[in-house]
Image 1 (cartoon, rainbow, N blue to C red):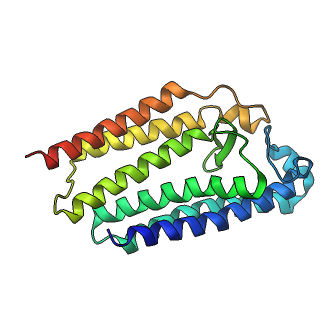
Image 2 (cartoon, helix red, strand yellow):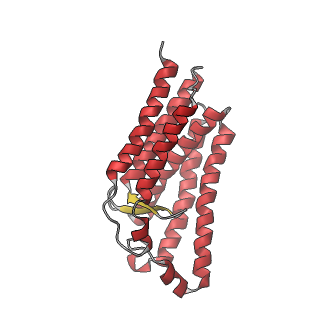
Image 3 (cartoon, rainbow, N blue to C red):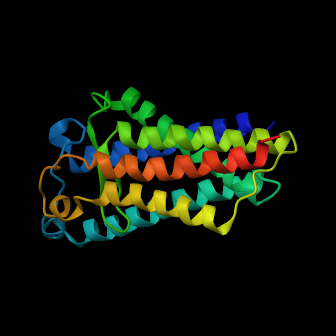
Length: 222
């Protein structure tokens, strides 16, 4: 529990670094918006016409996104005393990083204009897009779940899970990811985002949340 403030502090500082990089990329590729960002995206064909160095920069961006996940995972592994704590600290770090990322961008660019502003979340393996509020909801849920796990660990009430629990947790997570990637063909073709698939998003979130609450109830009931 004593490591939680340190992990959050690290995540907020890391979010500053990430948001600074995004600010540079937006200034480079969307100068007409004053360093801001709007859809449609630059297509691969348009990027190729700009020169081979831009395609190389896209590959570097893929690597940066993967490195971000590895760094957040490493924090969990370093801070956690066991697998449960490692996962919990990762969830707290990821959620704190993501929310702080938007707060830093708001400070730097005045973006997003609202919680319903569309954003490009990830590029790997295909573009993830949604209104800003969707990843913030997931991040808040991750922070909450991670804190519950860590509190239970501190009280010697570890939340043991079965393989069936993990099947439903992973299924819920994948369903949320599918919702984020639902419109990827249109986005890659340079189109404007279609309405977000909120039913699929909340279905995935609901599956994961219900499963987690069942794990908590099973392990903490008298």
